[in-house]
Length: 337
Ligand code: SF4
Image 1 (cartoon, rainbow, N blue to C red):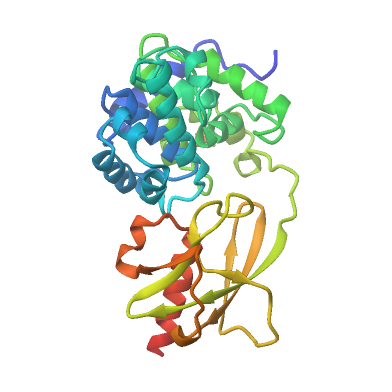
Image 2 (cartoon, rainbow, N blue to C red):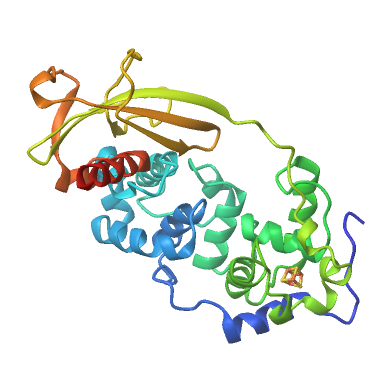
């Protein structure tokens, strides 16, 4: 056996389902039978918490009410709706996948697991979520919260994203999936992972599987999931010019290589001897970024063919990294003091 089993008299799936019917989330805006809604929400939720996703999801669906509407949009429009959510490749893949659905699946999201997993940006867990939440098929899921829940409940050793540990977690996910209520069961797992078996201070007292949880019984909850070997982030320094005039900001669209591909940001240049006017730290997944900001007067600003003046109130229409908002906030604070 790959992982420890539970007592025979404990019905894991049923306990999870009972909890869901009493306490689970049932009124999220994407909890409809529309597979397109489920898909968009699942992609947004891949790296972002439910509370933050709700607003983004509603705006996105208002702008692109159907898969076909999304496919016909320009990529830049899609990225603009994603501004602030980060991990922009999610939006690029969503857009590309919508076009593939139009070309190959008559404009609808396929309902076969393998077809879904063949689309850009849809991995096994996202495909499982679509199959279960939209089509009520008993296909398991394993998002970050569910990995944590299973890792603790069954004291699965190793980092959840490592090959052999991941395999064990999928075995558990497959073993307990409910055939009768896969939609509710998977939603319950996600809810328990994000509301009860939380990363910090899990609420074991109200957990439906507390009586069988190995981590709880052994008093080792805070040792699971086990961390992966730490990867040292690279430091990166970027000198950038901030030019604001008449409520307009001068931005360039970055090229498709390097950080923030094709997003709108401040022009970068080689370091000068002059000290920066502002220094802003920003953390990316693999890098610690030090942004040295030089405030440049309009008069001195050279026009460039690849940049343009954008009204700050219209910035939301130009996909840009969160770091730009941070810089603007620092700039406003600086101007006020
Ligand atoms: Fe997580 Fe605590 Fe429940 Fe165990 S008892 S699964 S650690 S919330």
